Length: 115
Length: 191
Image 1 (spheres, rainbow over the protein chains, first blue to last red):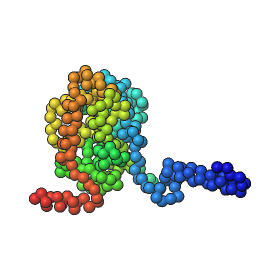
Image 2 (tube, rainbow over the protein chains, first blue to last red):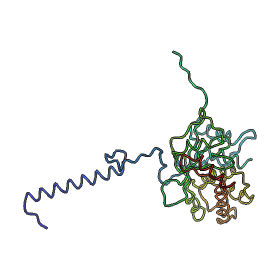
Image 3 (cartoon, each protein chain N blue to C red):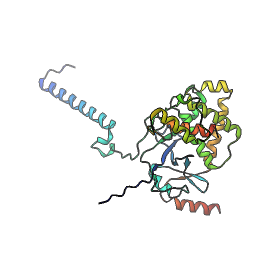
Image 4 (cartoon, one colour):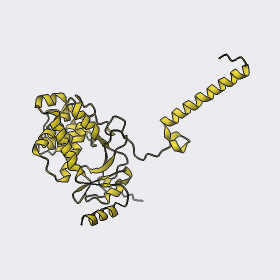
């Protein structure tokens, strides 16, 4: 299609630009719904959701392979064992201790394996 | 002016979710865990307490018989972990590697829940699942475990499903704030 009229050309360009702006705006607000002026996109989420593909806020991929072969002392609980190893490796209490952490995996391992 | 600073230690409870339906993005139900030497799930009269929405966490605590102390235990403001049961079963069935540690995380929490039910796990199931959990604490590869230990995937899946059944037979689900009324009704029906 050939547009010959200069006025029509101008209108087509403006329409295209407006369309592009709307598309970019919609994409942005769908990606960041909290910033959206439209309430329908601004759904309140009081709890953070884990990232897709991960099973915890810590990433859950922590495998303490470096601790393989370590054993708890006879006086140590699983918790003491995990704390000793992780304190030595990362510094005093300088590591996560949540449900999917290295700390929790080592604690459970020691309680289970050496009970 | 003297300022009083509380020196009482505080501990965050863990809010954890369980995802059963692979087609839904958010967990199907939740519970709270009291972390300690032994991590204890929320319980009432020998039943595990789950709830359908994280907003019901504080409400669920009012029914729990755990040693809850509001000055020590802090309610979490985010979900600490989500256990994807469907994904775990898929990995047990087919995967050669568990890069996200989904299986060992799921097994660890499942052992806590089964212990809380007081139902005795069959020794053979315990042996299989403990051996797998020990292996996956330090390794990501699944195939060497099954080959070296001469354990079949199906036997591990059977043990896993037994645990799910044990948990399912001993839990109460809170779906709305007037749960006390629901419990009363249940008791009347049973009696």
